[in-house]
Image 1 (cartoon, rainbow, N blue to C red):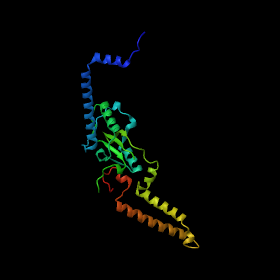
Image 2: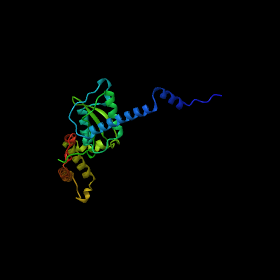
Image 3: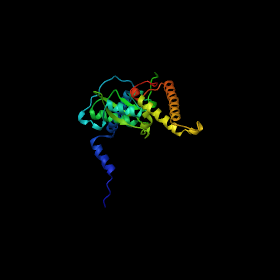
Image 4: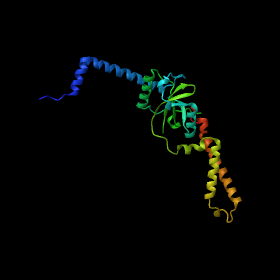
Amino acid sequence: MFSRTNIEEQLLKVRNKRIDEQAVMDEVMRIFSENTEQREAILSNLTEKSVEIENQFNFNLLESSHIFHINDIENLCVNYRLRFLDSHYFKADFPEEAITAVNSLEHTHKTTLNNFKIVAPAKLLKLENADDPLLFAPMGNDYFYLIHKWGKDLHPFRRLLMWPYKTFDNLVFTVVLLSILFTALTPMEWLTPHAGIGEYLFLAFFIFIGMGGMVILYGFSKGKNFNNAIWNSKFYNA
C-alpha cells in the first residue's frame, strides 16, 4: 500500500529547499578552487627555500607526542646516520597525505606554516658537493613539531650498521674488534708450526694496520665524516 522511502530523493529535496542546483555547483567549485590554491601554496613552501621564521601555533591544540627538541632530533640522526635539513633539499615528491597533514594543521591553528624541516637519509636529499622522511615545522626555542611521516620504516639493523660511523672512537673499536675476530679465524698452522701469543699479537696488529689503512683510504676518497658531524650538514661529501 505504501511505497518505500528513497533516502537519496529525500536528501535531494532537503538540499533543494536550502539552495538551488546552480548555487551548489558554484559553492563546490569555489571550495575546490580554494583548496587547490592552498595545497599549491603548501607545496611551494615545502619545495622552495624559505626565510628562517618561527611558526605560530595554538599551544592548547598541540599534541605533546609531536613536540621534539633539537637535541632529540640530533640524537636520532647521529644514531641512524640521517640528515636534518630544510625541506627544499628533499628530492623526492612530497606525498599528498603530507600536504593534507600540513593543510589540516594550518586550518586547526589558523596559521600559515613555513620554514619546514625534514629528517631523511642523505640519498633522499639534494645535497651540495663540498627509507623514511619526517616532516617538521619549527616552533622556536629549538623545538620542532612533527607534522607527518611517510615511506617505509628503516632497516631494523640500520642503527647497528651505522654505529661504527657514529664517532671516531666507535670506528677504532670496530676495527680492533674485527682484527681480533679475523686473527681468531686465521689458521695459524699455515703460517707457523708453533704459534704462540707473540705470533697472534703480531698478526692482530698487522690486520689492524691493514684494515685501518683501508678505512682511512675509503673515508678520505669518499669524503666521509662521522654521524655527529654531518647530521645537519647540507654537503654531500661530509
